[in-house]
Length: 170
Image (cartoon, rainbow, N blue to C red; front, side, top):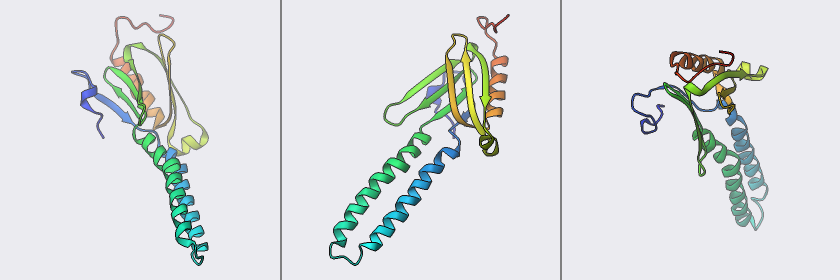
């Protein structure tokens, strides 16, 4: 999916656009299955009772609330989180109702680090940390193909040198 062109300046192009890794959806899917299975089991238990219709309505209401809270909300957060590298900047956007974002010009990037655990390496994701010249840090968790993203960012930073960018020690 392409990043919205109206957020880009003229001449700016998207190099990489990522959402968090699919692993963040494992628990929401797990909770969906648990709520459906437990709700179905409990609905079957009360099925022979005289008050079954009231119990089914209560169970359905509880199940809807739990599914919204444990599955739909995390899915919406995942869907609205974007990590984008363009030819001019790094952008990070997240949020459904309260939208937050950070733009970091490539000329201000001082260092790019990645970290991933054994499980992250198996799944192909990790944490990307970008430090700016002003000691700001952008830490992005669950970045798919984190090593490739770090390499692409490093390439973009070095391909777009700025007059005011001086690496430490230079």
